[in-house]
Image (tube, rainbow, N blue to C red; front, side):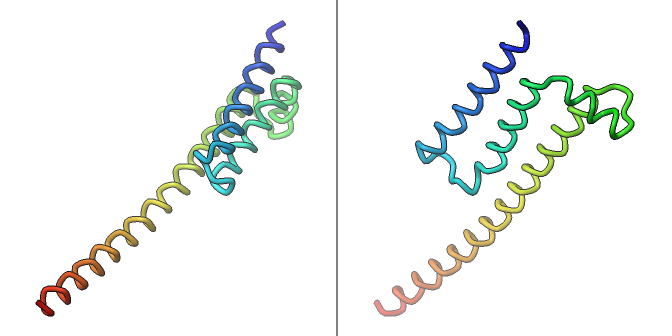
Length: 111
């Protein structure tokens, strides 16, 4: 019975992500990893003992810790990716501000 609840939660998460993509709140490029994560969540909720097999394969004694490690790696990857994008955007904003200042100066010179 608990398995059904996890499947329902996984499907709701997946539908929410797809809904946000369709409403243009996310670009397809941005949401790719979230769709992958929701698919993994759905697979793990359908086959809950697969994490036990993976943990045994990696030699981990407590299977839920493997799940936390995967979640941590995923979130660190997303944070790193977002930090990289923020840095790129900050550089573009600085460049645009400099261009605007130059254009304002040229306009003031013509007056």
